[in-house]
Amino acid sequence: MISIVVFPGSNCDRDLKVAIEKTLKKKVDMVWHKTAHIKKSDMIFVPGGFSFGDHLRAGILATKSPAMKEVERLSKKGVPIIGICNGFQILTECKLLPGILIKNTNPKFLCKSIDLKVDNNSIFTSSFKNNQIIKLPIAHSQGNYFADKKVLNSLEDNNQVILRYCSPKGQINNNFNPNGSMNNIAGIINSSKNVFGLMPHPERAIDLTKQADGILFFKSLNMYL
Amino acid sequence: MKYRVYVFFKNGILDPEAEAIKKTLHTSGFRKIKSLTKGKFFDIDTSGKNSKDEISSLSEKILSNPIIENFKIKKIDN
Image 1 (cartoon, each protein chain N blue to C red):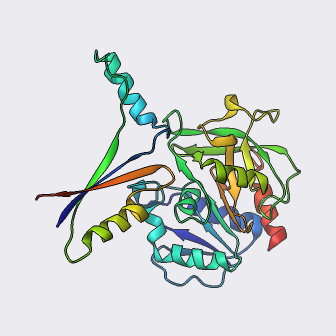
Image 2 (image 1 turned 30 degrees about the vertical axis):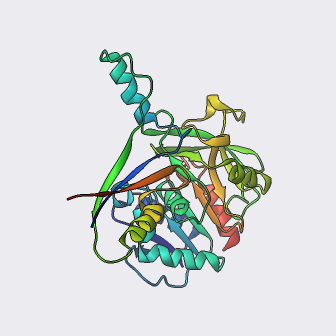
């Protein structure tokens, strides 16, 4: 069983359900945020959207939901947790992942496909080649990853940055940084390596006739399950 | 007891909204403005003992994110 936590304002939950059912052939349980007990899950997703209207700060209000308390508890037991976009913001606000996502340097809402470089050294990315360059959609106005120097250094030293914005040829620099994220960070894992947060949307890239790089994410998860 | 909690970015945290406001002020003729920061405030009416501690705790845990923001609490009269 795979669970997706749904908040008022989530809008990628259904896409995620379809992507999981298509690629993993697993049953999906949609967990309303008021649920105080999450059934035995092999994996939990926190989807994208605008939980609680992004009021106060993106993600903060969702962290107080009973279902998120369950996610925190289960993450400590080693259950893999994946937060996409607003889900990533929620995971940083409840401190399952370090740092925070602030407004894009150019405060526009970005909605486009973008090149990313993948570190395959995680259960979430093991189906990719190391340093593979892929294309995934992004859709956010608060995706600018920020952390203090100490946290940033420890992320780099422990190989916790597993997705970075890059050029089509894989160069990582400011010219290919859409939102101002430190070190071009697009996705990180926690130090126990069972919690993953990313701004791009793999669930929107599973169409073999168009964009399909998201499929490899789900394939990685399949190897784990 | 009423308190006003101010939440504002720490020094050095880029605030593109404040930058955009500053630019607009400049183009509207207010060219002497050197810098501008913005923040938010919350008026909270509470009762009971240790209410200041309670306000401080909720400001730190929920109203602000200490990675990027500071807060200040001021007691206010009605």
